[in-house]
Amino acid sequence: MGKKLHFQAKGMPLIKFQDADKIKSLQSGKIYAKTLGYYRKREEETGDCEVGDKYEAMIHINEATIYFPDTGETVAVNDDLLKTSESNDFVFCMFGVNPTEEKFRFTDKQKEKMLSFGDTALIVLDHDEFIRRVKVAAQKAGYKVYFEPVQYYDPTIDGGNMLISLLAGMWNIAFWKRDSYTYQQEVRFVFTPGDENIDHIELDIGDISGITAIISAKSALSAIVEKADSSETESDLK
Image 1 (cartoon, rainbow, N blue to C red):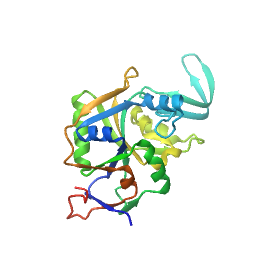
Image 2: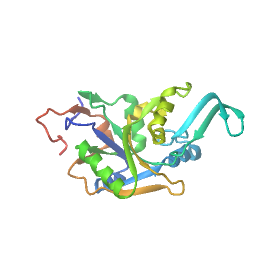
Image 3: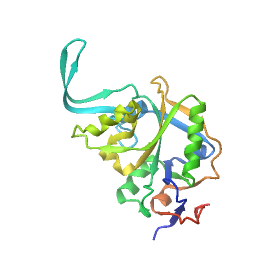
Image 4: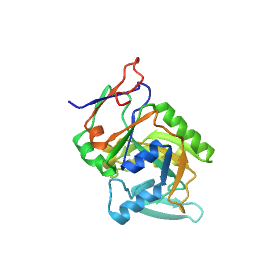
């Protein structure tokens, strides 16, 4: 039986998988948010399609006709990727456990694939406080910040849900990924405006050792994540 990890009942349990040095830096309060373009280039240049994703924050069109009213021109689009004004926003990504699940176990696929992100895991024990700190730091630095779970889509189908979401804000493009990435159960902070001329931004949210715990990635992936009872306010990791 896996070791049980007890989280506070409120909010979504969050986990960051990364190399040990980067996890220690994160626990000290340093948030590194890379541009979405970094992840596109990572797959294009290295072939890494686990961390990298050439479709990242791009609108994928299987088959469509685009009309340009200024010129009267009609252009056929087939299996193409369209960049948006938000395709170079900055993102900080984490694994999110569905807060409605009483118990969560990582699948065999997740146990295999998530190790490609790093050998160490940071467990966020206070979801609300962590999010508050990130938002405060982002706003002080002059960025708008959005936090949402990623939605996954079938790239062989031109679905309307993604396009509808963009009507509420083009930054929503950062919360859509192909369904081959579903195993990542990703949640994201998106910081806008982006800048294609820089690789990342750094925010300081202050030391978070009091609301997080560090364990090996293998230990985290073999664990059972349980919602804590309402009377429990600490994790067994603390």
